[in-house]
Structure formats: C-alpha cells, structure tokens
Amino acid sequence: MKNYMYCLLGILFSSCASQSLEKNVVNDFIKEQAEMKYYYNIVVEKAPSRMLALDYYEKAYQDRNINLSSHLVRIAPNGNAPYLWPIDSLEIINLKQKYAQETSVHLWKKKDFVRENFANKHFIILKSKDHFLINSSRFRKYAAGEGLMISKPLISDNGYALFFYSPYSITGHTGESPKTILMQNTNGKWKTILSYSDPNVIN
Image 1 (tube, helix red, strand yellow):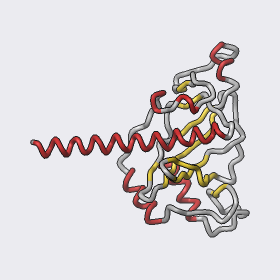
Image 2: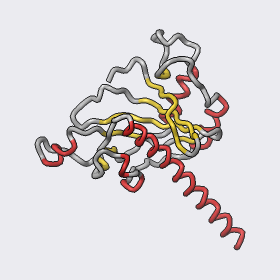
Image 3: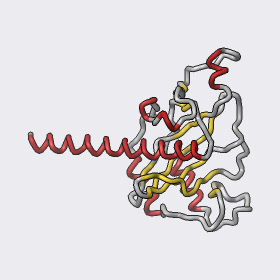
C-alpha cells in the first residue's frame, strides 16, 4: 500500500511539473511578444491540438532540402538561413509517441497566464459561445486589441518546445498566418529561435 502511495505521488508530482513547464513556455512567449510591442488582450479558450505544431514542423523538416522558392514546399521556416533543425526524425517519432494518447481538448483559464505579460491586465478568455455586439461596451473595449489562439506546447527531451500559434482578431484578419513556434530553454527562460508557416497561405 505504501509503495502504491509513493507511486501515485510520483505521478502527480510529474504531472504538475509538466504542466508548470508548459505554462512557462507559453508565458515566456507572450512576454517576449510584449517586449517587441506586440500586445494581446484576448486568448481564445479552446486550444488547438498541439499535434498541429508537430505536423507543421515535421513537414518543414521533410521539405528542408527543397528550394524555398518552389511551390512544392508545404511548410517553410521563417527568417534567414541557415536554418536550425534541433528536432530530428527520431525525436519527432518520440514526441508522437509521447503525446499520442492525448485526446481531450484543452481549455485555457486566466490562471494559466501571467497578467503582467498583457498590455490590458483585464484580458479576457474568449469562449466559443461569446459574441461581441457591435458598438457594445465590450466590443469597444476589445475590438482594437489583438488576440491569440495557442496550443499547449510539446516539450522535447533536448530542451526545445513546439507549439501552434495563430493571431486572432474579432474584427477580421490580422495579416499574419498560423505558425509553429520553436523555443529553446536558455538559463531557465524560453526563447523563440524559429517559426514555421505555410508559404502558400496569405491571411
């Protein structure tokens, strides 16, 4: 019985540590965006599947030897070459196995985020049933702001994180396409090192 309790406590501790790590990734990204003057005041409650992030990265990795000017490239790294590929084919397989059993939809809550990272500390979690009536006080308060849809991250064994990110606007397109963000843990902080998006999508 005692061994069972130790085992249960170990599982709970591991789960809590994993959730804390995932929140750190997301909050470090939002803080990083704020430092570049990209502010958010809306988070879409229903998180996209984090396997979308791995799907984007895997396609970019598979197409890494195709000329980026070719229309054959499905997902392309953003930024200047040379491009880093810290998650190789073996680690892609490991991540697929690690998260294969995850089927439930994740719903973000305000407590998941550090409020100081948001320009408007009264940011909202936008539920799927929420509607903004034109010219309502709520619409006026948030219509000029920016939002985001963001998945829970996948954490690799070699200190990298991948998550799917898409800007969100209640007034229409943002001009920015959905993408996978690759972050690296450096001295306890997560830093964006590259992103990957579909070069054939204009948002």
